[in-house]
Image 1 (cartoon, rainbow over the protein chains, first blue to last red):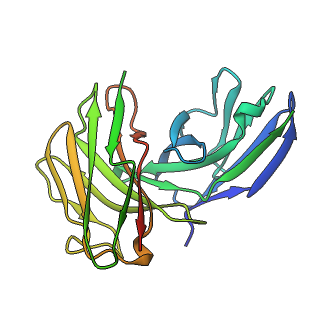
Image 2: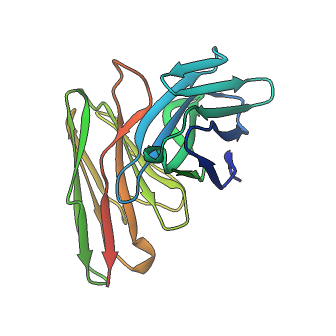
Length: 113
Length: 116
């Protein structure tokens, strides 16, 4: 059972547009949601994270919107740049083992110039 | 800043042989270290979670007999892939949370294992 789901699997936007990456989860005990950015051939880099007590977390062009009731969250990348082209992973942790992080399958983002 | 280094970045081994990969935390104390495998077309599979002075917890489908892990101090961990076969190919990632900042693990660049 996939505990963390991401959509779409692939997303293409034009430079300057806002990219919206979606994520949902199953386990109500999850209370911490990091997003990772991964470029080909590299390890995943922590991008931004949100705790379930918040409904929004912003860091520059990256914003997480969180809906606890619906168990959904989304990552918005405003003013998308070609350098943002990467795979983005939504992850979740919490409950009895806060350091066990479950990942979604990722969204491949392509930003066209 | 807090960083995680992994070595080697790439390795090739013959089918049935073993290889060891290392993980070094720099700038913070890695009380917990998680080892993941990222296979082609798949997301991250958690292999095991290691906490200093505690037993290592392996996930279903992964065993200590196949992936022995050492976590002797707060800055270093290693994992060995024993008797590697084609299905063991992938990017092995070491992640450790910098607890002073947040609980999300910081990852190294990974060790990419190819098996011939």
